[in-house]
Image 1 (cartoon, helix red, strand yellow):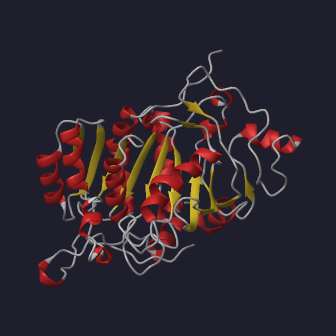
Image 2 (cartoon, one colour):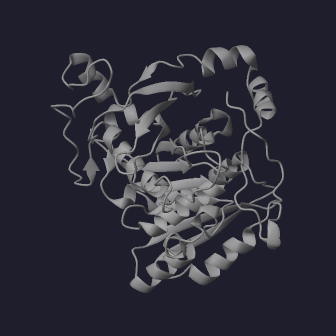
Length: 379
């Protein structure tokens, strides 16, 4: 289990000059996580169920598993190689894109109560040149024969804090994946494939999910390499209707910024407790590039050019600060193609558990209504 520093307060310390320190971590406290473990059935259940199979190879999609077993996919035992020679024919929807390959090597990191697993792989970004870990989760529906020829919407989940060397959304104790599964059963959520990359290249700075001159190209990593990775390994939609972000704190900023920056690729974002403007110290001397990564300026440009429509759902706990920044953004830029809403999480603080609660209380349903879901085969 990863060791995190716990944040229990929504208050944020001030920087020199009175500026608020941005994007504090929403890390999971190891002691609190231990309480959750014991409260969820005891250590034996934790050890036998949560860790059962950890480190083992994982293949997403039964069609790929069958192809690999028959030796028809050219992958070999390492799981690397060419696209399957005889992939299943997709449905009549021209928006469906079958896995492009090459397939990644996935290792299980944890198992959920419903039998689904979260797995990790190492991704060498072909476009950014950055190499980092990525965690993935697919819902039970992904292996359901009814959906074997259908695409699935992708939710790229970004963490707060430094988001390195781990993405805390891959920790099952936060309940993100469980919330999606329960939402599918209740009819309030689409069955998302969740992609969880590292956010920054180190623990030294925030890189604002951007290509800051002279620094690792984290904007290209998030906006291009990570989606390319998802397309290589999963049945996805070609159009932006199947692509969205969710993020907390610094991850919320990056998700919102990326949707506004590339509205032709991504359609929506759930931005929880996030900042509104870039503020990495690494921007010094690069004002033009910083402006090109400023959500306010990006939203203004989108309004002036007339779209396409993007959807931003802010989440904010009533016990944390920052709603004034969200409200100001909505008042100034929530018009025309920039569709905005703010969800108040009652008694919510600046942490992932409360943001997942907000998603269960309505944000998952909100984003599911603006994205495209899988289509089962008739029969």
